Image (tube, rainbow over all chains, first blue to last red; front, side):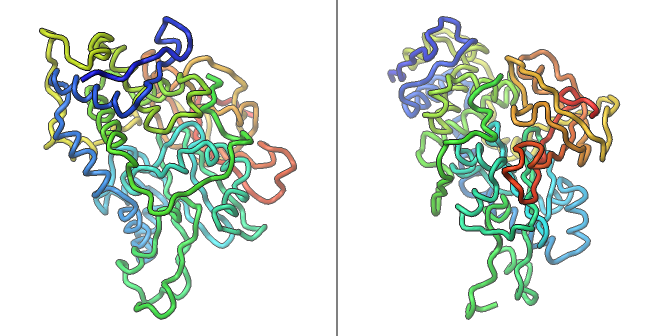
Amino acid sequence: MKSAEIRPANHSDHSHEGQRVPSDPALQVMALESILVEKGLVDPKALDALVESYEHKIGPHNGAKVVARAWSDPAYRARLLTDATAAIAELGFGGLQGEHMVAVENTPAVHNLVVCTLCSCYPYPILGLPPVWYKSAPYRSRAVIDPRGVLRELGLQLPEQCEIRVWDSTAEVRYLVVPQRPAGTESLSEEQLAALVTRDAMIGVALVQPPHAGSPP
Amino acid sequence: MNGVHDMGGMHGMGPVQPEADEPVFHHPWEARAYALTRAMGAFGRWNIDASRHQRELIPPAEYLRMSYYEKWVAGLTELLLQHGFISPEELASGKAAAGGAKQTPALPAQKVAAFIARGAPASRTARVPARFRTGQRVRARNTNPTGHTRLPRYVRGKVGVVDRVHGVFVFPDTNAHFGGENPQHVYSVRFEARELWGDVHSAPGAVYVDLWDDYLDAA
């Protein structure tokens, strides 16, 4: 297989001073995989298993269970807010990009929002891989300087007096927003509650909506 | 480095554009790029800081143009070349060189779940003193390192309050350049929106930034 052409992007012969940019990433990835497999450095089945894990096993449904448990069990909520890594591990979640977790709780007076202005840090074990908008320049640039504007654009209008706390994930600590439990959900089971909790609510760009009127509790 | 990746507070990047029912990967090659990066990272020849820095070295115009996983492919390629996993000739031909040494063992499929579950904790047990305590006023240093740093430009020179002490962690500025882990305390520092951005943003708000001891002075 012929690999993608690599062109120097910085007119420099010193690769460590700049970064070459593949002209065709799809072709380049195929070439890399083929070379590395041939050299015995990569097991293609391990790649399949990694992809399978993030496409089907690890995702926001994990975080939703954590939030639903916190809403249902005051002792768990207290543990989550004190030591989120341990509390999340109680439900069997943890590891890569969730080694050090902190949970921050939304209240009527305080709304929390998570960003990574420098790259794309995100709590994989409970939310999966981040969506494109979270990694995009518009979100990374504006979440810290104009969080209210960003939230408005995403359809969330908060009262002026509500304090917005933006958490910029600049270190290896990853943040989970515990959204407010919607009114009218007192009779719901933990499982039913988990079904209401969305990825966006756990990043802090949405509220959790109550179940549709008329739908079974 | 004062690169374009350090985006906090920039204007003109346009609206945030969410995608309904977004897939985890948009193309099969993105999934392979993600998995290859993880599988090769498992050898431990580089670290997350080096890997982030590699992507920061993408020239700014390209950085803004490229998709997320395009940047990952560029960064991974460079790391594989630098650390001798592949040669420029192999990359050009798309074939492993004849007689080239085969390095094993590769991460096997049956160890992937354990690899993900273990992660790569950046905390360290080194007994180094914390320079600051919760509630203390601190000023982020006004410094402009040309290498990797996790001190965003928008907080440099600004005063905040230590909100919590996270513990002792590897220091990215040295670790990214294989200059040692230099473990030290990391703090969540609360900066009032007014302190960061001036009076234009009058509604209540604050930004919490995770900062290492070496980024801070008492204020």
